[in-house]
Amino acid sequence: MSLNLIHVYFMPGMAANPAIFEYIKLPTNQFKIHLLEWIIPTKDESIESYAKRMNEKIEHENPVLIGVSFGGVLVQEMSKQIQYQKLIIISSVKSKYELPRKMRLAKISKVYKLLPTKFVGNFESFAKYAFGETVKKRVNLYKKYLSVADKHYLDWAIENMVSWSQDEAIPNIIHIHGDRDPVFPIKNISNCITLKGGTHIMIINKYKWFNENLPKLILS
Image (cartoon, rainbow, N blue to C red):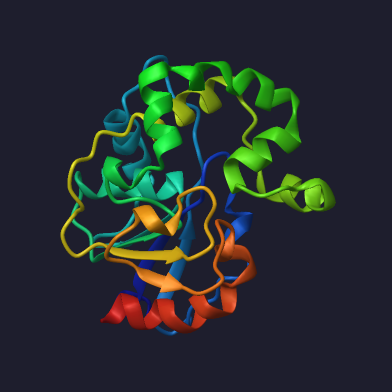
């Protein structure tokens, strides 16, 4: 039975840990879930090199790659280096043209270089940046999901997010996006499955939709 299982690898969003997928359940007779975790980048490491190192954690042929937010960007880079069965991104972008204007301006002005140090010492500020929501009432909840507080990683991740240079969407990519996502507004997103009422953290609070629909999307 295990030989016929479809292996599904999940990559969390920026600074997040795999706990964001704790409510995701796929039929165990068809799928095997594998949770990836962020590793600390080496000095001046390119996202291509980072993706190659992350691919070393893929232990099965033709996997399904699913990434959330910046994790969606990373699985796209990973997909360029290996054979895969399906590529799915959630609350993410397919090219630099789907980035919001403020991020594209940040790339030009380099203002993002001023952000990470503050975020390491100010959880609420970073959580708002990562999730796009006010978190004062839910700080403890987000502390559960945001655990990668290494300054070098945050510098690297933010720079590679705002500076991502992908021009065109990867063919046949499946993009699931919420119509209330404040980090990557839906107005900039094209060719996606739109989840009504979905915010940037819908992988957590709309998990029932994903549990129902991900199997169909993977097998389609």
